[in-house]
Image (tube, rainbow, N blue to C red; front, side, top):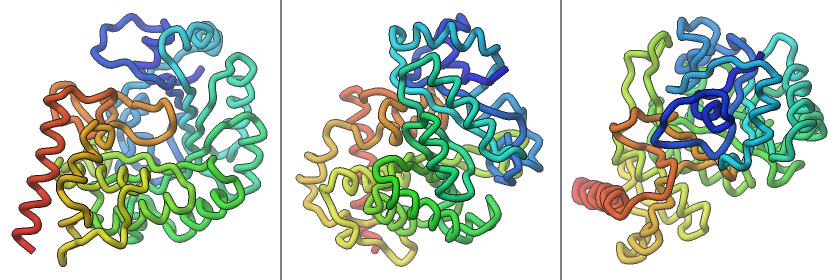
Length: 324
């Protein structure tokens, strides 16, 4: 048995639910209960969250025969990638290796893996098995938040990620979560380092989930998230440089170092506010409730959505500038 996100199960023809948004990646979850102690995750050791949840998403179980049948029609239903999320197993990477090989036997779709690896040799073994990309999830952006909410050394995990990116160029990704006590200066400084190392960055907004140690927390203000999203996009597209960004004493972004006309032009399509990460990944409602604030748009924005997101960003920068 393996868990599949509810939306992916619909796309694979394994569930019959009506949805207003469909994933473009088939998301799978390997394992129940992780050996990690991440305070924000329902799968984490020490939390009391439902084991059938990751993020805001429900992950029902299906047999491997059902998965094989579903993947046979995946591309016809708009699926462009497989994403395997693996908890930290007692058996190390062996369960992930086995699953990757099984997936590659029945599908030609590129496969991304998010898993805990201990060294570059494990990353190489996973790529040899058939992974297209591997994510070493950093999650908490500053070292203090990492120690508090994940445990262990952020410096060590970043060191491994940078070493892998150097020796396996274009193949490494990471996850960053905004809203765990970091400043925007810290967030975009780390984004800049990661992008310059060739690491693909998937940006998330913190979501308080029932049953986790952080269930009483709050998601980040949307204007702050828009500033970080825009910064990620401008840096990734090489439309701006981090050393030109300006921050106030609290680390809040007050300028991208660009004329407002250029900023409006660069961000006019709304692409900066869409889901970031691996190619073909849109993660519908992973951070959001339908009808609520959308942090990561899972599709192209409408004209009114583009205007609202850009207006929120520009006004917040103008306000920050006046306060500085």
